[in-house]
Amino acid sequence: MTIDSAGASVADRVRAVVAAHRDDRGALLPILHDIQAEFGYIDQAVVPVLAEELNMSRADVHGVITFYSDFRSEPAGAATVRLCRAEACQSVGAERLVADAEQVFGVKLGQTTPDRSVTLQQVFCLGNCALGPAAEINGRPFGRVDRSRLIEILASRETGGAP
Ligand code: FES
Image (tube, rainbow, N blue to C red; front, side):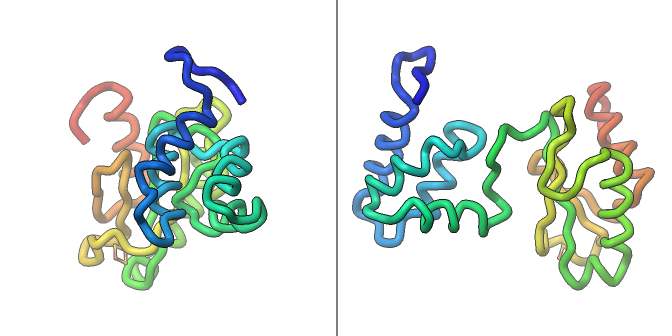
């Protein structure tokens, strides 16, 4: 366990998150979301702390973390690009966009580029089905995304311009 600049250990911070959900039933998922919000990702070091606090096995905690693609095991890149792969977007080219994005960034879904500029993720419906292929970049929705538009959006982010 490491000590952060404020002097609190990771374990202490994880226990504080668990304590905030003490009265919730089946609180593992909201606890994991809060831990990811707190640290930016879910480090393996939190697994034994959560297992102890929630009276679960380490394998069960680890299984939940790895089952949900929302949870990251390493810090995200500067831009988190989430590409929709649900049916409506698939019918208008989502798989092509995923393949293009993997080629452009040189990583697979779920991975972060070595320079930590982009984390590429999949998602199943962003609620933007009429404008597929849909994407979300750092929480902001984009529609009718193709290879060139994806590059254009990220380039405009880097230069501070409007997408
Ligand atoms: S199916 Fe892609 S946004 Fe709904």
